[in-house]
Length: 305
Image (cartoon, rainbow, N blue to C red):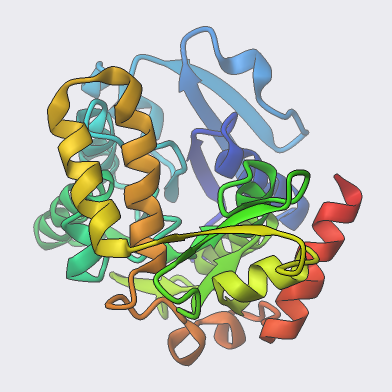
């Protein structure tokens, strides 16, 4: 029987908004958006969306909300400080009889041990380990992780790789490492297609992308590097500096260190971040683009900003 009843956690976040929009657009899902108490008013409304404010610390209450649902999609930001929330949500889904759980794994490829060992991604691995345990314990329970690489649109909006206004960027190592990027609406499209391809995507991580690019290609798409100021950085040196910053206890250094470790997960030459040979795009009917076409997507996004 097809998945039709879907619970979405994190519907008012960047990823969650994109996923909710695509679930609504699909037209064949009844969506229950669960939020923390007081946050429900910010969720997009539609005829097939019900908003419920819940106490994520009340596991029995979560089970009641999730009972009778086919799938749970988690899109919140999984961090060391809130990992228990996501562990409890997964456990509640299994106990409530939910068939498919999509964890908030969108982003860097934490399936790679090198990435999984980095502090920003350890909580995701912890959730995945629990999901595998729950699959063994609950016959009808299953999960799918969706690995997307960096979010192309957010990386541009947040000036995460480059700042076109000041014509400044960084090349990590030689700037030629290839990595996949995906726009947020495509992340939402991937969620819809996973729910529609329940059996094929069962109990595994799948890879989705718009397409591959390099740091140099990213800067070229923005009009560089001529006339730009490019700073050179070494991946291993930045990683060591980031660990030192995290250990220092200096709160002003913690978030920059976390962001640099996320960049390490993308730029490290030891991590094969080009998803082209393992992407599920074709199987799920999602368009896939060449590097030159990704440059066009970058230019299009910037021109609309």
